[in-house]
Length: 191
Image (cartoon, rainbow, N blue to C red; front, top):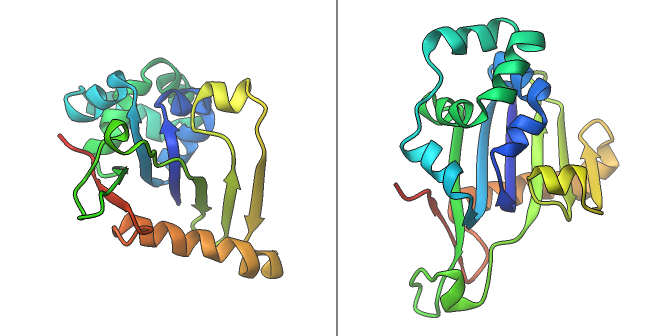
């Protein structure tokens, strides 16, 4: 199972908000690749770089019982879950940032531009995929409170997938490998 997401703003609170789904995703060997704009919550950055991952006993409980124990663990310890995902190579994070005319990396303040695309792809172990595109960032506010639009393109609806879904997969791979659109770079999360 994989979840690839490109989004302007991402918060680990998304893991917490979708605790039961997150627990099942992890229990089934799920891996996530995330490309975000350079606006990350400091607590999320701290959890990724210096955070204390779940200890082995707690991680084993999460994976063994995603329905109850796993969902509770994700709900109560989402920053430790985030650190554990990074430490166990279940989550890779890269940052989309603007480039100047000479190729130099720029901050949002220097450029006046921000990596703000919002799309993603889920894939299950059987090869089924759902690509999606929408206005929402990845936060509790975006999912639960804001007025947002969101379109999904399942791979089993071949005409829709071929017309819209496959392009999201190609776009993500281009961005992930730093073959992003002109004027943009995708780099590893600085440590």
